[in-house]
Length: 109
Image 1 (cartoon, helix red, strand yellow):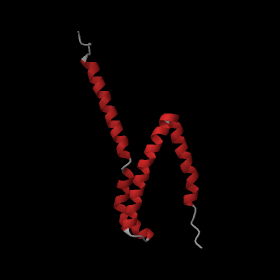
Image 2: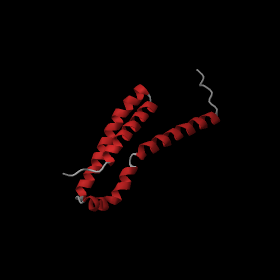
Image 3: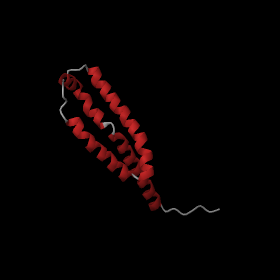
Image 4: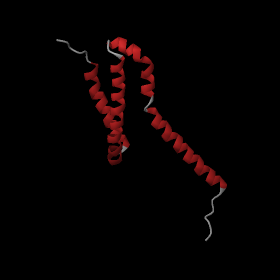
């Protein structure tokens, strides 16, 4: 049996595409860590601003990471079912609808 012909240029192009995909997937995976890296140096300032212990600030970061990972488990199958554009627009809409409630001043009794 003869082996299929594969030109060196085509083989190099395939390897380049595989490397590009690997780099893209790696960068997408690393994006989720940027909010954590931004917040870590500001722990003492956040604790002072909100008058809470640093442990509570650390707990909030842990909860953020937990909720982010759970949201990925939910968004993935929804994206497969309805398409990534619809899921993204739904998440943006949900964020816009929830923002005024979180930005409104708290009323204290």
